[in-house]
Image (tube, rainbow, N blue to C red; front, top):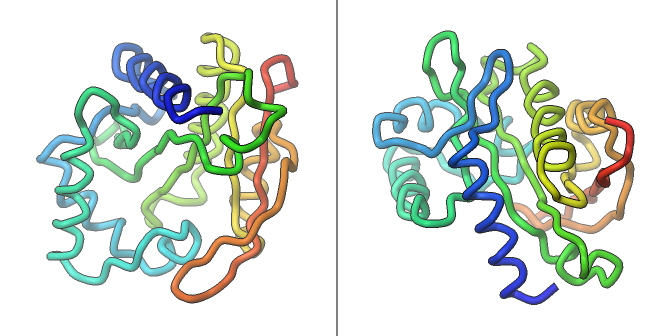
Length: 200
């Protein structure tokens, strides 16, 4: 999959998600706004969330501000990180990212297919309520059943049983394993995938 093709796919996915936002009974995905900083700062500095997601360590409000500013700079033509807003309160409780991971780009069996890699991050205070399961299942239906994408990929660290269960519930199956380096540690990571036509 060439870099030009990757850009085309991400631009298409971004345009779709911006014009037809992904929505569940409790969550709405939308671009980040400046007013979301306090909510972003609340969850992006949570240590356990960083450990489970592989996000960079962000310890201070200043570091969170720098990360948020970088995120806002990317909110141009192609948005790849969306705020997950809790409809009931309007609070941003996490984010949903679209990408195409390097190993997907390099997989010749996927070269002629259109798909995205997705990742979800959720504020610890809102976990264990089924929100991530709800959002991932909806996103899969959005891309595969409602639009003409061929696959959705996601992954989890070997020790993250919660993410494994969420992805399996969404109908995803093991695709490949690789090692992810985070904070000087090498972490076994399991990648999952689901194709259009697979049971959801």
